[in-house]
Image 1 (cartoon, one colour):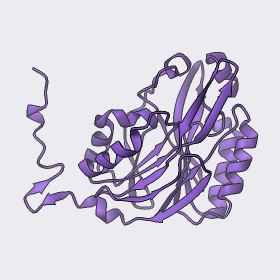
Image 2 (cartoon, rainbow, N blue to C red):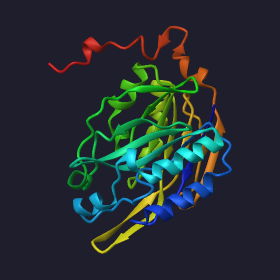
Image 3 (cartoon, helix red, strand yellow):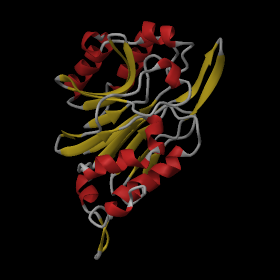
Image 4 (cartoon, rainbow, N blue to C red):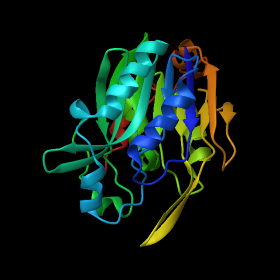
Length: 263
C-alpha cells in the first residue's frame, strides 16, 4: 500500500481557497491513501463557537467533500482529512475517510484539547477499524495520542495502519508515536500542519514534522517543521500482523488485563 501525507498551512476561514490548494497539490499524487491535517479547510484558532458554526459544514451537503470525492475518483485513491463537522446543533472536530464513491467513514475526536472544549462537542462515535484496500485502518485526531488506550483499543481490533490528522502545538507527539507503533506493532501516519493562526484574540503556532512510522519504530519519513510537503511511502501491512517481540513474547496475547484494573 502506498500511503502518504500532505503537510499544509491553511489560511484561517478561507475554506474554498484552502480546498483549492489541497486539490492542486494532490492532483498528481501517486498513492492509495493520503492523510491531511486536522481542520485543514477552516483553520484552527476559532474566536468562539459561533465563529466555528459559520465555518463548519454538514458532510453530506459539503462542496469540500464533493471536490475531494472527485479527486479520489480521478486518482483512484482515498483521503483521510480533518473536518469541522456540523450535525444539527452539535459541532464536532472530525476526521473523514473519502474515496472514489464519496464519504465512507466519520470519526469524531473524543479527547478535546484546551480551548476546543469551548468550541466543539466531544466525539460520540466508537473507535473502530475499517478496511481500505485490504488494509485495516484506524483513525484518531491530534491529542488522542496522549491516551494510549486509543491506539491499543484499535490494535486489539486488528488495526494495521493508524491515520492521525493533527494540529500539534506541543513538541512531544512525534517521539511518542514511535513508542505507540512499537508497543502495538502498527504503522502510523501523523499529518500535522505548520505555520500560525494569527487572530484578533491571539495567535497559535504549529510544529509541523509530519511523519510515517513503521511497526518497529523506524521513521520512514519525517518533514521539516515549517514547510509544505507531500510525502508518499510504500508499506507492507504484513509487517503489522507480526506481533512477536521474541519467539516467546507476543504484544497482544501476552497482555494480563486482569491485573490492569483499579482496586
